[in-house]
Image 1 (cartoon, rainbow, N blue to C red):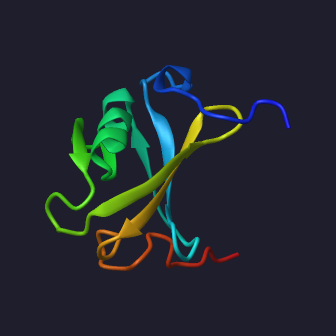
Image 2 (image 1 turned 180 degrees about the vertical axis):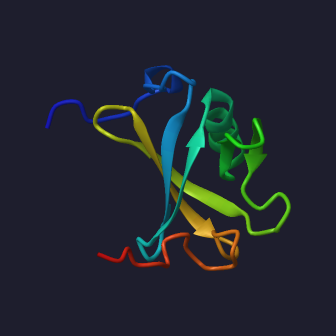
Length: 112
């Protein structure tokens, strides 16, 4: 297939706020744990430190997952989608991903 290989941070397509959507997946089970946003700095820190970093839209600052709770996410692999406008962090979670204490933020069904 054409287009396989690596994409650098400069190849990521950010939105008008300079953010990109990040899906976080358990590297062992494949379970989707959470969705968040990253800017260029968060991606650089994630790649260099091996821990999941994000941009908090509500706090307006960079944050490392688990910096307060201790529930860090060790990053195994960072993938970019075919359009380079979404990122996947494959992680080893060290505790729940959700601020409610649930393993995943996706624990509720949408009612019809």
